[in-house]
Length: 417
Image (tube, rainbow, N blue to C red; front, side, top):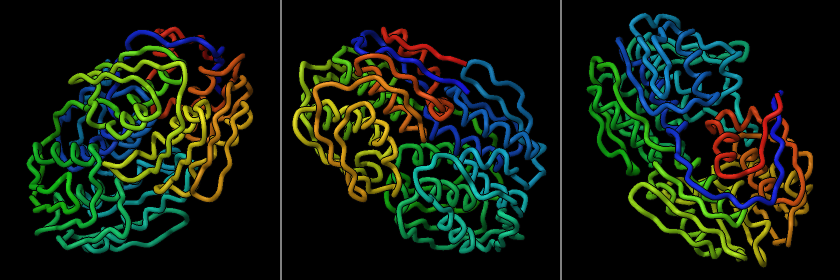
């Protein structure tokens, strides 16, 4: 099992290019199941979750023509298997995104209850409830969800809570349903908007993406997808924090600054110097940081996927910071590992109280989930001494070559295999 060994205390300097968005490419890959033909997707990050999704699609009958550089060519003409195997679904929650497309295309789906990061229950009951409203019937058999429908029919669906994957799943299913579907309290994340736009390019009729209400008029069939994935906003934010926490100066290139505005505002409030251009962000860490309060919310609020990284930054800020996690119920597991490095963090339910310390110390660390592992890498970069981070397969799920990118910025980091 790979480990990362980091000798902290080096200021990061230089440029880092941002890869394609993991959370955008996964639903687009699932959407290829709605098509029959040759799909070409560019800007694909080489991360573990993408590899898992491609394996899942090939198990369902798709044929991977090539995955060279950042381009995937996938022929979905032969998709005929409705069953998503446990060994793949159990490692990645986004695999539940095939549920709606399979029912829409094949009339049935057998999908194991999903796994992935241990950051909360993250049930897919909203997905199932929505698909039932479209006419699907479900039963649970030995840990597998069996869904079926002779033909999906449009309906009005209200999400009790905002759900990104639920919105994506229902939008894909409704694209091939009979009649009109209206999704209320829909997610507004850039990844959802992008998926809707790509489906429209493929022939779907979707309006309202980026608002609370998305309307889908079902069509008989979609054309194969051709698109380029936009830059990963969470990766961009992580490298912004890496520059600040090490007191370095880094230009984050090939990114979309408008997608990380909440983080930009909080970092500026904390005393970090930031300059924004059309597709780049220059971050210069100062001599001292000031604690700021953060509350996570669905987009366009502060992203939950940057909460752990921000907590790492606040461990070295003057004064007290209060971080409230409003999206997931179990997303403070990184706090215990940060405390082992000398951080002063108190957890009270959904709230973390962080009192800044003068210095963190290197330590053996254990990653528990994707974004927690990123926070540990950031803390280790700033700490005095050496840290060894285990279970880095978590970080490989969502960050392309993070050790190589950090080395190019001057970090002392190596991977032990």
